[in-house]
Length: 379
Image (cartoon, rainbow, N blue to C red):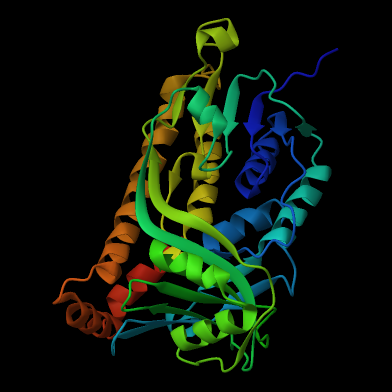
């Protein structure tokens, strides 16, 4: 007898796997589509996860263990002049500002948790279900098949990611530098509080990317040492470099009914978008995955709170999720885009304005606390 599912999840990345575990915990039978074998080669990505994301992953027993997680105790941000801002976990009265998590370790823990969840079945191709959750990422084929417009605004920048070994220990501090050339460099601490390795995300104008990628490891390390003002001493590249273009993006619709030719019946099947299939932001604040996991949490809350007579495919129900997350993501995109524009525009008056503004912000304790709480997902 063919297996019957309540939910089909297309996309088995972090957001898709977390969604499968949360929905199964709510008592729903889930098919998780995972046709591929995953990333090839070494994965150099690391995520900065906030308290809300950590709580979600802990609730499904998918939080990685040390040394794959590093709690950020301080965050230091420098502008292109004398402007600087510092955030401190102790001053905010929290355990950590964020947690830097190795992507491969997180994916492994999620997969292990799925292995213990009998209501989740891995499948090689999409199956029929009342509700399909699309978590395929920014290049989602399913979203395109459904004819959903995905408005993409390129930033004219690329991100380069890699790993470094540093002469000095990072001290559990996340660091970020805004360059006068429009570049944004982030060092994310790895391997625990006493570690001396960092994950790098370097956002560069298109014109610089090719040259940086063409450098040998020694030259690239020297360029990073200069951009980071030598804060961690001599640097050694310890992983391959990966690169991708940066853009802000947003789907015009986050839910809908299946096309007639796909389901054969009207109103019996519906879909929703989550994670990067629905939106994308600049990585300067490390909020991309946090927003995706917040999508999943909101969707589960909406489905659990539905009226007993309302089916999973009810579009009025799914639009509750769309409204909740649409407004939250719009606010995050507005903030990220504003910061990106502020630090990359070349207007003559902006450097002094943003440096002065950062110093004023650093001394405004209530405002810093409000911003910190929102970034941590505990506002």
